[in-house]
Image: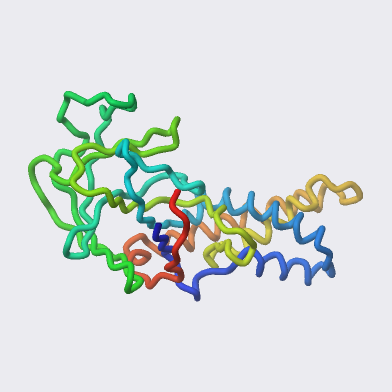
Length: 252
């Protein structure tokens, strides 16, 4: 499985860097405090990725014998789904609501929510590229169809001519084995720092309620600023940005 992150090195910061910086500021250095901040930071990353940072990843997955793929563990919502063609472009698939989730059953309705051939976007993983070229089409979708089965944690496909799927999706930022592997956009660094500090004192006795309220307010202020900054970093720009990471991971 190929994973492409839509952030350059200059645009990202690791969870480890955020935690180490906080520990230095607070004069702490114990492993216990690091692990405590790490767990809080993971929760903060998920919250920020849900509605603020919206980190987008692209993965290359292979259909199984049932024409399905398993959703990545950090999956929140898909952005677009397609298949690579011989020219190195991604052909979009159409969304079909009536693909059956019952093994062995076949849909008799050929209609689709997406009745036109979708646009294509260039895909060149080996040159760290994934960038858009939008076009118009007509008629039924000739590339195949998909439907997300949230209960099973899969996406099911029909009328496919290839087993290779490119899934572009919003990640909750939770993947990675260590704090050095987990990243967030630099625009959201202060929001994450504020979240960790707020939650680290939230249940502590001996810290007055006023300080806790100030910490909470600071987090939401920083979150608002991060959202405004991310809105200026629009999707088309993100798609044209050189990837920070191009790495091999085990298939789901």
